[in-house]
Length: 189
Image (cartoon, rainbow, N blue to C red; front, side, top):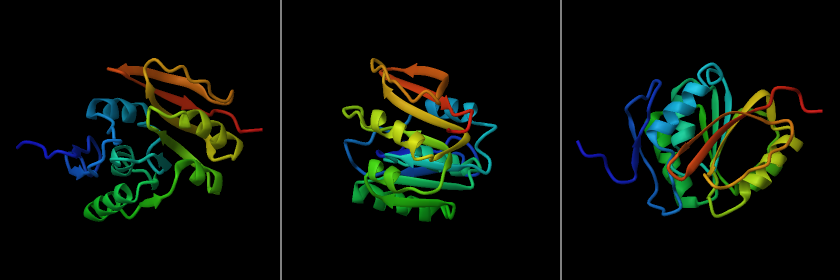
């Protein structure tokens, strides 16, 4: 069977091999299966029961994968109304009660959020510097519950500087994409 355009496969968990559709939007750059498999291997001992935040949700690949693998709660944030509507349809198709879809700008969401997260997925459009704005806000607003993990995708040639309380514990590249996993080991002072 040939996969439909604008669809992807959930790699693991209770929805393993299920296909989800995503909005026809040129700004959406889904995290490839192989990268997601590596990421969730890195998170294997952290994902069960975790509160996850998927900023710039786009295809929903990271958030739905987290929910499939046992995350207790996943908040997917995307500012594009048609993208958020498609995420809502996929949530209903999967009967993913632990997933919330929020149609809002990611930086605005971070500025207003009140509850901390165990895992944050940060995959902003590469042409922006939103990763450099959001990471410090996650730390200063105390939205990371130790020992939180923050996953970041960025162009391979971008050098990112993060708040001192985040340490890079894993890093790989795939084509023109660098993907990194950061840990917040100590409580924020």
